[in-house]
Length: 398
Image (tube, rainbow, N blue to C red; front, side, top):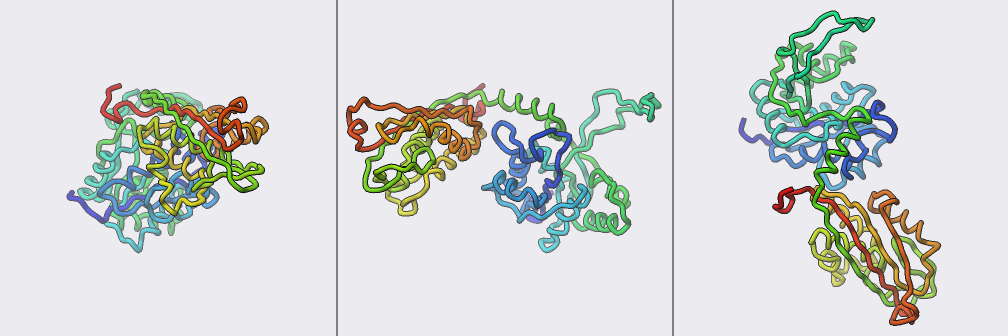
């Protein structure tokens, strides 16, 4: 099928994922530092043959969803139903005004979908009207009874494991879902089953063994280990910042508003701790420095809160497929005293970056009354950042 601007995708993300164990809905948990749903959504949002991506979520998860997928382009999320089937229908109805020719329906719990698999789904739907990706079964399968006794051994040559995205002509799958709802049928486990019930012939196309569904805690542990092993390009960066004192009654340090008898002379809020951390992260990425991304000559950064700068640097790492392993900042000043603020500062940096507090260090020292910090004319900070990037991101082999 040639490139079509009329292909849409529905990402089903309204479930609770109880079998995945504690930690909230599984689609909002992280793998290698990135939310599962962001990994699932992005390949559709960036695919050149898809013109609209429709997420279906639980309204109770709105804040989680918005934070997890910030920066991606998609249709406003719609609320899901009590079952997956109801959630898919809500997504289909939401696309009615856009009237796509083809719709792909994908589970948010499958975060390893590739552009190639999406392209195969679009081609299959254009050719057959209804199709799903499948992979072969390599193990012998047994059919058992209620007592756990084997009743039959199906021929595995005729069996396949169904995956998503499942692909359909939009009008026919919408009609099938509406008919099922009218008939009170809410027991279908996937959209291909609804299509079969509606009398459609469902074709298959090549799936992807890596396109697995995250279901249990073991799934998360295994994939976290696998993805972390791929992030073998370990880099470090350092940062340094200084600001002089001026008039004021507080200073911003590591994201906290700290009472003081002076303020900072600065274009932004002057948070030397966060500024040093930003430079350290950008240095590890070989991506310039804070001044090149947020020039002090730009009026939009006048008085800006520095947590925006740090979040930006963290997002730059994520955009390269990486994760931050450790952050450390050292404050150099006579006053204010940093010791009592150390743990609140670590907690605030953790909130901004999404890192565990155990991966953040805040230290402090004086300059023994020497130099401008010793004379209490200002505060300096040094920082270091360790990040992990995928091998091959910059043309290097693992």
